[in-house]
Length: 590
Ligand code: GLN
Image (cartoon, rainbow, N blue to C red):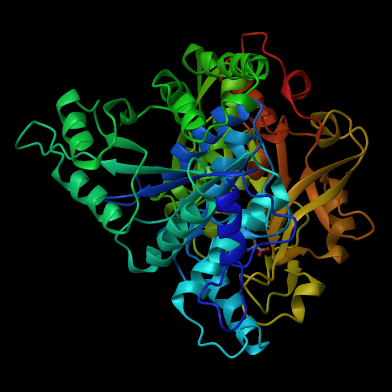
C-alpha cells in the first residue's frame, strides 16, 4: 500500500519536467474509493446502464455508498441538443443538466438524485482541456492525449469519488470498446487501475452471444473477439456478462472463460428479461454482488442487516409486478412514437404507478399527425386515460389538441406534460373561452392570441444549447385543489423543468373564468405550472416533467392519480379508490 501511495504522489506531479500528469483532487484519499468499470463489446444497446445500475443497487443495499458516472464519447457538451429519435430521451437532472437517459435508469434504480458530476462527454473533457491550455495551466508542455486528456478523465472520476465519498464508483462507458472516441476513456481506466493498485478496480465487460436462426445454436466468436480487443488495450476483465436472447449455454460460457482468463463462475448468462426490475434478483442469484465485494476487498464494509431490510422492500415491489390483476390502457400521443426510448421516463412512471395500484397499465401509442376531430373518438375508443407528453415544434399539434378536446368533453382521464400542458391551455382558450385564434408563438409566431408565449428570460437568449428553463424548481400549490391533495396537502412540491414557453399571464384570468384552475405556480412569479379542471373526473397538466422523478418504490402522485382514474373508468362497478385516496396511500409527499 505504501508503495502505491508513492506511485500516486509521483503521477500527480504536474510540473513541466515530469512525464506524468495526473492531477489529484484535494482531499482525495487513496484506498477509500473503489471503481467498477462497465464496458460493452460486440455492439451497443446491450443494457450496460441497466446492468451497472442493478449491480450498483445491490451494493447500495449492502449499506455501501455508490456513485455512478456515464462517460459519453460524443463531442456535444451535454445531451440537450440531441434528437431523442436518434439517442433516446433527454433526461434532466435537478441541477439542470440535460443528459443521457441512462442517468434516469440510475436515479430510478438507486432512488438517488444525481448531479452534473455523474455525467461526462468528450465535449466536456476537451472543452475543459482547451480552457486550461488557454489559461496556461500546462506550463509550456505540448498537450497530449496521454497524459493530459487521460489525466482529465481520471480527475473527473476521482473528483466524483471525493465529492460523493462513495465506496464504489460505477463508471459506464457509452458505445463499445472498438469505438475510436472511447479509446482514451479506456486508456484512462487502465491508468487509474494501475495507479490505484491491486483490488481497487473491477472491470466488467458486457458482450453479446449471437444465435443465428439458420444455425439454431449460440455462437461465441464475436464475443470472444470483442473481449480480446479489450485485452489488447491492456485490460483484463474480471467479470463477463453474456447478453443473449435466451439463456447462454455452459459450453459457450466455457469457451469465453478459456479465451479471456475469467473463471467460469464470473462468466454469467444474462438473457433478455421482461422487466428491468427483475434484473437485480438475477444478478444476486448469480452471486455477482459478492464477487464484486470480494474482488474489491470491501467485504468488511458490508452491512447484512441493511441488506436484509432493503432487499425485503425491493422484493415487496417486484412481487407486485406479476401479481397485477387489473388491466387498463393509457394512450400516449407523440411525435417520436416509433422509438420507445424517447419516452423512457414516462413509460417507467406509468409502470411504477400501475404496479403500485396492482394493475398492468398497457400503453397505446397514438401518432397524432393522423388524428383529427373527425376520427379522434375512434382513435381513443379503447383507452382509459391519455397522456400528451413533452414536445417541440408544430408536427402533430392539431391532433394533440383534438385529443385534449376529446378527453375534456368525454370525461377521459387526462395528464398533460409540459407541451401537453400548453396544448390543454390552447384547447380551452379556443373552445371554451372563445379565443378562437389562440396558439403558442412556438407554433405560430404571429398568432393574434398568444396564450402560450416565450418566457421573458428566454427572449434574450440566442443559440440552442443548455439554455431553456431547466432543472428542479419548487412549485407553490393552491390549497384544496386536486394537485394539493395528490401531493399529500403539501404547500409546495419540487419538479423538474425543460421549457422555453409559458402561459402568457395576460390570459390567466380569462382561462380561470372558463373553469380552469391553476393549482401550481412558481413562487413569486406568475409562471403557471399546474392546471386542473374541477368539473372533470381527472384533468391535470403540468409545465414540468413529473415522470423524471418517479421511482419504483415511490411512484409519482400525478401518475398514480391518472392510473387510479383510468382504473375507475375501466371498472366502473368496482369500489376502487379515487385518485386522491390512491395517491395518499402510496405516494411520496415531495
Ligand atoms: N416546446 C415547449 C417549450 O419549449 C414544451 C417543451 C417540452 O415539452 N419539453 O416550452
